[in-house]
Length: 476
Image (cartoon, rainbow, N blue to C red; front, side, top):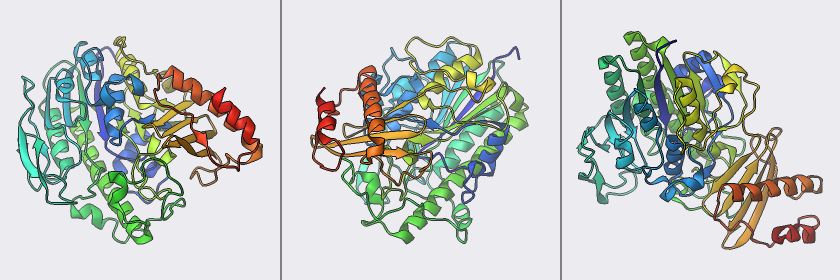
């Protein structure tokens, strides 16, 4: 194909990796994502490294849009400096018309230099999906207006000033963003290819959606996860963050199932509108010229391990869905190659035939399209604030917890044979060598990633075999 492909990037908020029916979860309803799975290649082991702030989506989105690693962002990703080229900037400078709709959690200045147009622009944090304060695109980049709104309607009636120039009361954020994006496709008449960044706010809480989607789950069987528990078994350094206060303590089975149904209903709502976006491409006659990428900014526990948020390093929070489909992309293929979201930027550059900016640190995984058995990253570094550090190879994951200067727990999971991470092997003498091996990898990652956190705490337990040897390893 001589003309560069259009790119439609669909991004969701808080959608876990295992919430696509075609990928093995027959309790969630996602017919349109299922079609994308059949049309393209699915990365079943796409990850985020974690986050340096409770709002994990903020650094996650900065990593995605700059291709930079976690500790090479600016202010946890709250803003993106000009020296860090964004995807939109790279594509604009190569003849693409760039359009952005929905959530942009990395400062209005970086949004403005990334896009030529947009709609329903959201620069805030927690929201009421039915009363979202958003901006129309401003060619001059003036997004300084605020509106008096209830801060968190699902929690209190406190009023605050929120960025925005309008609210479409009574219309769900998913529909606002989808309708604006479909309108752009319908009316686009340039010969230049386009890059669209459609960033939904769902399925982030508050878990509300049009009633018809919740009704689809009313009598549908939805199971408790096998790693459900009434509470997390030890202090992970972040047990009472906002996300964890969305359910009672201890966790209740009935309430958890209800929230899972609501979570799935929000995903089904987004899935429905993704189908409408695809139909718009087909109606325009450009489906065969468009690469579609679907991904999410992070996962979410919703009851797993007694947690409800994403402020942890379990699989349910660090793994995300990732699907590529379109010209040059193999169909109905799955790969277990390890990739980060920050690797998408250089991959898109190679698919579009444009140079990868010097500021990008991610690794292109284009080679996997030709050979799905190709492996990209052999190990992954995992981070949450200064209290959790982990490293993951192709079978095992080590997680170290340091809370108030003490190492409160070490976990080792064989996630191949124990995908729900139920059995901690860290204190089994048979796995001492694996713990030491991965701890060495963790310390090397810490240096390579310029991680400033103090990851060596005081071990207070007595159960670890060869304790003196282990303690010595912490100070060597």
